[in-house]
Image (tube, rainbow, N blue to C red):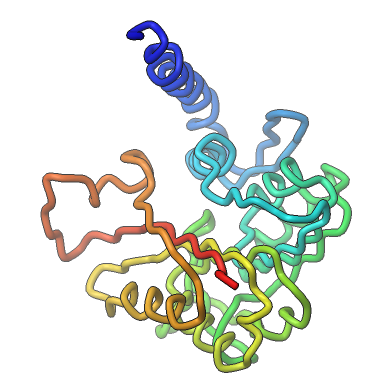
Length: 264
């Protein structure tokens, strides 16, 4: 009995941690704009730490995994960054159709290159952020994977699109990693009436230091639109501040994942 438990739980966990330790050592110090290979993919990266963290979260911990009911699911990918999420979706569902959004102009060029480099088909990418209103906004880029809308002048102008205009047919997954715009985007989609087209949602909630708390509103919105949801706070490496013993640190940001499935 003990041997079976070790074989089922402890050994796979050990192998996973061993693999991640090797990948962290290999990738953490890699230079920006270098080419890295994994599985059958070749990608240009924005920086080593971000690439490692995206690989760990998306390919090993599979934070964006969902069960599709057809071979060619339609996926709306808000916040595509360099394309790791798109690569994951294509790895699991080769025939899937993807519409991806990335507002950062420099990152968008890397995203386009990585799609072309890996010869991905049925992928459309939009150089725009996801927002409540179409038009433009000021975007504060960190040159990596954490840029966001800004009220100040220290940024550059980007295009903003409404996600609802892309929900004119059944969507298997709406994935949102849009750095704090989650609630405003979901409200606009709800008001448009097109949230009914979405079967499953995976979004990353961003709890910005000293920012307005919006998690409750997001969960209430999902509930009133017929979604059953689950919440997860990543692993310790990605988000250590949410782990017990709990301590409130006003200047600290925190993140969590929300998965929602429409119950018919």
